[in-house]
Length: 574
Image (cartoon, rainbow, N blue to C red):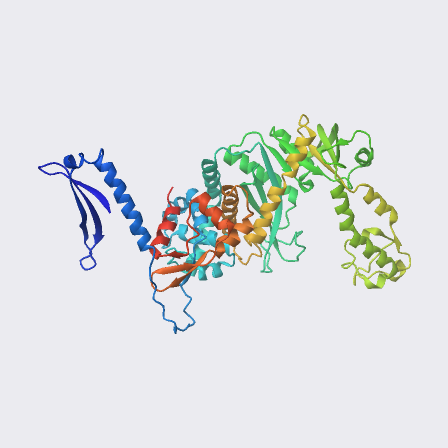
C-alpha cells in the first residue's frame, strides 16, 4: 500500500491505494483502500497531511506484513517417501555469506567478461562460484560437487562435461585472477599491510600414482609415497593471501622462495617488504636476493645444526634479560656473517653481511621438546636391548641415539655383528637437551627491537593456519585430477576459497575460525514443506553473528522461495 496524490481541478486528492496483479489477466491493477480527501481540506486537521498519512500507511503495511506472516501449511500425514523425494527439496542458505564476498570481489564480472574469449556454451562464473561454495562448505571431488550443485538456490543448468571444460579455461586465467583478487581485496578492505609479509611452502599429494612435469616424488609433509605438488604461498601482515605459485613435487622448498616473491613484487608493485619465513627458507641465495632488492628478512635459524660459536653464544648465560613472563629470556647481537651467494653467472661468491641474531628461551618450548623426544629415546634404549625387533624403517627417529648401528642394505635389518656393539648415545642426548627451549631468529632489521622481531616472527602462525585451512576445511588434498590444466584450476579455485575464507573471518571480527564458520553455514539448510514454504532447522551463535554483521537473514524458520531469492539476490549487489 502507498499514499497516492492525484492532481484534480479542485486540488490534490489523497487516497491510500494497493497495487496487485490480477490472477486471471496477469495485469497490474490498483485498488483504493481508503479515500482521504482534498489536501487543502485536510490541512485544517493535520499540520502536514502528506507526512501524517505516509506514517499511517507505513503502520498499515507493518500490520499487513505481520498478518501475512501467519500462513497455514496443509500437510498430508500419510504421505510416503520415494527414492527421489529429497531431490531438489532440501537447500542450503548459509552459502549466502560466501556469495556476498564472491560478488563483493566482483568475481562474477571477472569470469563473465572472459566468456567470449573461449566461446563456450556455459557461464564460467556459475561453475566457479558453485565450486567455491562447495570447497568451503562441503568439499569433495569435482563430480561430487556437480551432483550437489542443486543444494544452492541458483540456476545451475550446466553439465558435468562443462565443469571439466571450465577448469581448462580457469587454468589459462590463473595470473589474471591473482591480480584481480589483489586489486579487489585491496578495494574492499582498504590499503593492505605489505611492509611485513609471510611466506611458507607446503605440498599436496595425489591419489593417481603417475608422475609428470608437476606431479613428482618428493619430500611429503605427510610422509606419503604418492606424487606431490609444491605450493609457495605469500600473505600480507593480516594473513590474507597475496600470491601463490605451484612447483614440481621434487622442488626444494628454498627454491620456491624467489620466484613467488619476485612475481608478487612485480605484479602488485609492492614497496619495501620484510619477509618472515622459517628455517627451511633461510639460505644464502634467498638472503642475498632480499638485500639486493633492498628488502628485509626475518628467518628462524637452526641451533642444533649451527656452528660451535653460535651454540656457545646460546648457552652462555651472560646477556639474557627477562622477557615478559617469568622464566622467558632473550638476548641479541649484531654479528658479521659470511654467506656464499650465487652470482648472475651461476658461481658462488662470498659476501659479508651484518645480521642481527635474536636468541629466545621458552620454558614451554623446553618441556615440549623433551616430551616430543621421549618416545624416540625410549625406542632407542629398547633398540640397544632388542635389536632384532627393529629395521631401518621402524628405527626412524631413534637411530641417532644409537651408536655402532648398521643395517643390511638389502633387507634393512640390523646387521648381527653391529647388534652386539650397540650403545645408547648419552652424549648426543645430553647435547640436545642442553639446547631445549632455545630458538634463534636472524634478521636484516638490525635496528628493530628484540620484542618486535619476536612478535613478527610469531605471526608466521597465520600462514601455517592458511595451509591448515586448505588441507582440512577446504580439503584441497588428495588431488584426484590428472591433467596439468585441471590441477592448476583446482588450486586456483582453492585459492579463491582461501581468500574468501580469510575475508569471512575478518568480517566477523576474528571471533570464529573458518572451520567453525564453514560448519555452521553448511548446517543452515531448509526443507520444502508443501509448495511454497521452506522450513529451516539450524541456528547458532555464528549464524546470528553473520546475520548481524553481514545483514543476511539466516535465523528465520520459514521462508518462501520468493524470500530466498530476495536474500540471495541481495548478496549479489555491489
